[in-house]
Image (cartoon, rainbow, N blue to C red; front, side):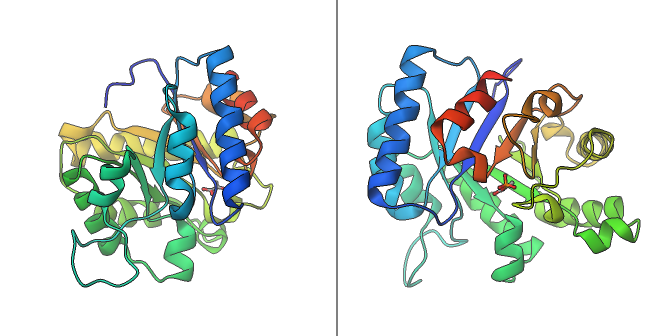
Length: 248
Ligand code: PEP
């Protein structure tokens, strides 16, 4: 992944919208891209059923598409699963793995997240591997310890392209953004950890996620070791998402 001097800005639509709203949002983003193409790498991650319609509307732009999860399996009798190969086959370039909502509500472990990241890479997708501490971890002064454990077990030993998203659980969808000092501390910690433990992937992109808006994106993205942002709620409106992109 060569995004030298570019930011990676990812919109996670989560389980929101309809076929019509996905099509309209993608069409609005395409219109904005054609009017003022961005030099940054933009990615949108719609729900599975709306991937194709989104890809269709983004055709001709350099806005990429990603999924919000993938199976650890390649193919076969795994009812309800969607493989990374299938996502690549329809035109996706990215996949989010280990989002805290999946870790929390679907009991995904870091070992499983690591397997998902590995198969994503094998399929030619770029996994965006999410890590982050809970409020109890932070209040108990355990943030870096918890993150180190998540990094050790979630980040595969590969030298192919992947990105890491630092998303404090307590900041997701709450309107509470981590302070710039906290973001800087964690991103520096992750970069140092990569340099020591995943030397071939030492320059992997590190994104921040957690209540990023058009009001705070510029300040967050100007911090050292913040290579982009993962945006939930504020990516559901083309206008706001575009303002975030333009502030990079
Ligand atoms: C997310 O979905 O990863 C996220 C960070 O959500 P929000 O921006 O709404 O906090």
